[in-house]
Image (tube, rainbow, N blue to C red):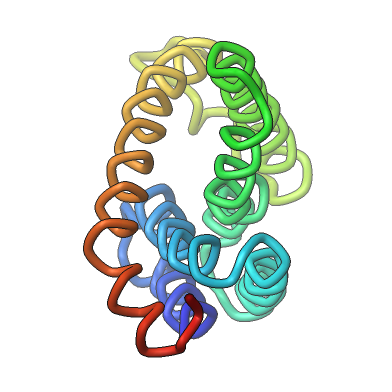
Length: 168
């Protein structure tokens, strides 16, 4: 179900003009349920399926890059990072992951998807570093919001779903 809904969200990135960032993040957020209910193995399978399907059918290829490089894998990696590292190391690792993904997306968008460099211009100033700084601030809020969603899901939905599937 998560594979289907996430793929549909990625498909409509070509219909909703500002969906390039929002829809891949929503598609990835759905992975929280897969991580909690089925674990990272199934989560990676869903991520790969959505990535391949999105690359084949989604019109907004930049949104596909955002999903593949960050939003699709982040909920899975976040769970593993927070489980396996101390808090400060985890925070540093998550920011490093975001920055590597953002920089890689920038270069792939320009050189693979032929996104014009002028799209990274604000008031005539070429500002990719400014975008990266702002992106880091937004990422901090995003990471916190994902944490709240995980807590909320675990409290409200996990007990019900685990009873449905006798997973406990």
